[in-house]
Image 1 (tube, rainbow, N blue to C red):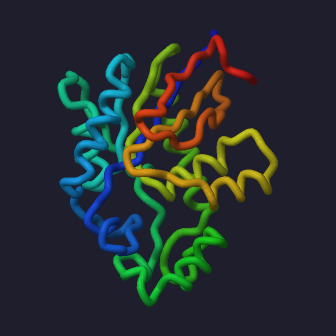
Image 2 (image 1 turned 90 degrees about the vertical axis):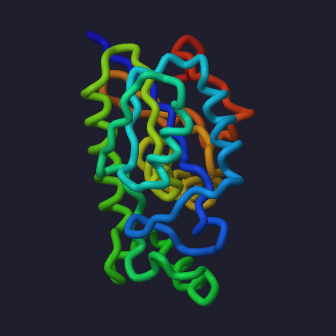
Length: 215
C-alpha cells in the first residue's frame, strides 16, 4: 500500500545569540527575543488551516519555545527527537562571530567541525535521515507533520533530500538563506524523501499538493 507524508520544516525564531552575533550550534542555547514572537505568530497563521497529524521538535529550548508558539491553540503533543538537534560546531559553539568568523567559515564551507570537537557533515546527514525515517514510520498515509528545528540542520536536509546533482546540493545547502520562522517542505512517498521547497517566509508560504507535484 502506498504511503505519502508531507513534512513542513520550521526554523526556530530569532534568539538572543542570533541577535548578538554569537555562534549557536548544537551544544549551546539561548532564549527567543521578544522581536521574533510576531514572526512566529505569522508562521502559526500560515499553517492555521493545515491539519497537522504530529509535531516533532529538536530538544533544544529555542526550538521547543518556537514550536509551542506555532501550535498554540491546538490540542497536539510536541514530541522531541534528539536527532533533530542543531549541528555541533565544537569549540566554536558559544563564541562570538567577531574574532572567529574566518575560522567558522573555513569549517562551515567544509561542513566539518570534527577537528575541533564537533560533528562532520556526514554525521549530521546520517542523523537527519534517521530522524526523518523515524517520523515517517510513525506517520500514517496522508499525514502532514510539523518539524521545528534549526538552520544548519536544514542545510543537511537539502543535501540529503534534494533531487539535483551533488554539486548543486552542496551549493544550495551552503548559500541558501534560512530566515527565522521560515517554512520548508519535504515530502516522502513510499520511503523516498524529496525536498520540495526551500525556506519560505510565512507570508510567502504555499501548502504542498500531491496533485500538482512534479516528480
